[in-house]
Amino acid sequence: MEDREARKGTQPPYLFPGYVSTQKRAPLKPLILMPETCSSLFSPVFGHDFVRPTDADLTRQHAGEPLGERIIVSGKVVDEDGHPVRGALIELWQANAAGRYHHQLDTHAAPLDPNFTGCGRLLTDDQGAYSFVSIKPGAYPWRNHDNAWRPAHIHFSLFGAGILSRLVTQMYFPGDPLFARDPIFNSIPDEAARTRLVSTFDWRTTKPEFALGYRFDIVLRGSKSTPMEISHL
Amino acid sequence: MKLIATASQTVGPFFSIGLAHLHQDSTTINSADAQTITGTVADGDGQPIPDCVLEFWTSNSFARVPTSVDGKYSVNIETGAAMCEVLLFMRGLLKPVYTRLYLSEAAKARDEAASKSVPQDRAGTLIARQGSAAKQFVWNVKMQGDNETVFFDY
Image (cartoon, rainbow over all chains, first blue to last red; front, side, top):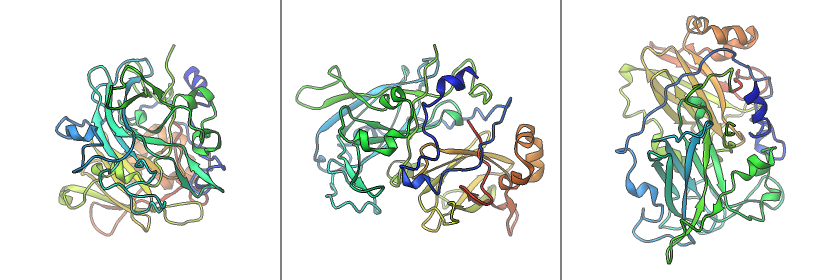
């Protein structure tokens, strides 16, 4: 119960009317609490044969280099006790520098980049650390409300220890002027939790004559001592 | 002091760019050895949801499938599995919904925790119905409204 209290407001609700698509898709009936039971501890294991080195460099997947500002994003994945999550699969996707996704349903009138797909994946190392190279995605318009623009972001999907550690989130960039008007970002009630989705500029990983560094650390649900017990979560 | 888990955000409409490599390819699964579950995912108006991705977790396997333009999905899971934990992700869901799917009444009855906590009049939404052939099942998901699927807090 203590954990439930500590978590209050740190996750978005299902129904958030300012994000119009939630209105017909959010569950409206009460969610069912499953006390005193355990969810499956199974988690798929993705070996190194599954992830190629080029999967962690989104600028080297085509014949030429993509346009845009080169970035190095790195960070650490830990559980709620601060233990590193090792060998965790991270899947990434993002728009190109012009704010256009390599997707047939993206109709934004910004150019596609023949040298950028915007897809990556990698495994965390023995310290739970990860790092990948990409280009800074552009902001883009969406039709949620009048003159609606998404702040620049990179989608992250992560597997941890069991189904309840599963996380899909978005990493943002510091100082984005679009934060204040973005309902997806602002759906997280707790300001500190919201701010943790904003990466920090990282001088240490910035490489001279090559790319700017950004740091984004991630905490997955669960811990070693109390693996995925629903009553505890 | 425990750390607080990172906040969830929606997968948005373009998740296939990043997630498609793990989509189950029905042509590469030996369906003779599998149980097949098919169904439709619909919104509060009953409209099919074409941009949903479902993950089926059994006690020792994982399968991910997207819905098609008509909101339909089809997934193969291992023979012998009687219960799946299911996560659904889509545009409009700021965090995934979590539910359980039973391939029979008996399987649900064996899962005492769920049997106890799910209201009787909604329990049917968690049970797949037998399809037209052996090892074929149908399970539809309704996000809200009449026959809203039971989703669990987690």
